[in-house]
Image 1 (cartoon, rainbow, N blue to C red):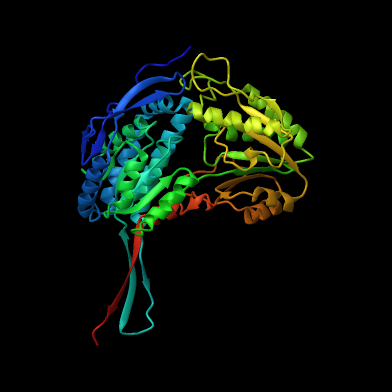
Image 2: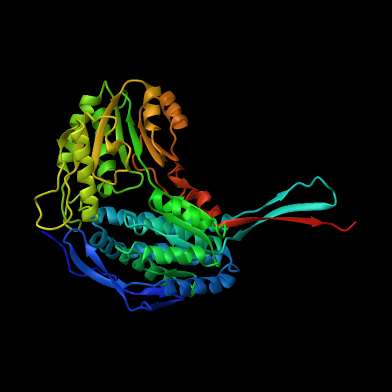
Length: 488
């Protein structure tokens, strides 16, 4: 039975600027749609460029005080935020499912992972160490100290509306920066819920601000306002390149987590049926709408038949439906445009000789909603677009290989380099793949590698910089070198 309700359980529908919930200066609003029902579930304030400027000014003023607070004081706010997120996990997850579509169990996992991120950076902020450097001149002493970058503009996408902002907010605040967050206009409610946790945790006014609104207006204000010293962006490679060009005018620091096209490589010593289950779970998580989702499956010819049969069987077991309904494993796609793009990729592949082994079309089970059948393709041509274009889609293309060097070359034959997956029980093969694959994240016998204490980011056109881990804190810090001359 469906557990859908008309209204998500988030309290506010406004912008959060300088410690207060406020309407847009223009009075405009944005409709938030449930992709499972195609119904409007909320109207939220649509901020203007002027609203963004006010938020940046508030962050710049708050920075003067926040940067002087101790890491221990900042940690109290971050740790309390994590605790509140865990207490409110059910409401936050339900809100996310209603606006984004992913099953509520996945949404709960995202909230809890994000709470862990806040807690981890609460502690890591206490370890923003400098160093004392041995001098070459006896009359001098050298040391380095850390300094927060300043005001941060954070832009996040719709597919992980809490996680991908938590990876910016938590380290920025831990480092002593202040921040203005711009969520995707289609999924603002989840982040509003996180801001409610921040507020109740004792966040001072102006330290973190939330502006919902047109991406171009808000990004332009981030890029031109002199107080914004860093941009952290998660999204498409195309937009990332534009931000790099704009950042040059004021030499703003950038952290970019961009597109991906992850190879998933199965060697013959791995159990093909066991690996097929991991592959299906990894592929169809959030409908394949994941930046690190495995998207090209290279399976050794000796186990390709068994793997493919098992993958098809596992894909056909997945329960499709409204993410709030019990037992649902795959929810709707995010929007009709994404569903149409998925169908176009499948038609291109089958038009070039690929076989659709299961799925391949919009589900007819539901009167409304963007539901697409989990799809497995075999026999792909090398020029199929799904092997070169980033497929944010529930489609699993399977290819075979026979030689290690050949599969490394095929896996690296892409402009992207975010994640890669290898399944083998041979330590030599594991090392050779880890060293040979051009990806910032490599999961060996691990289809879900992201964790707060380990760095997350890509190579090539998948971005620059790292989030999470110690590197994620360093991204919000400047290193100052201090040289002291001593009196004789």
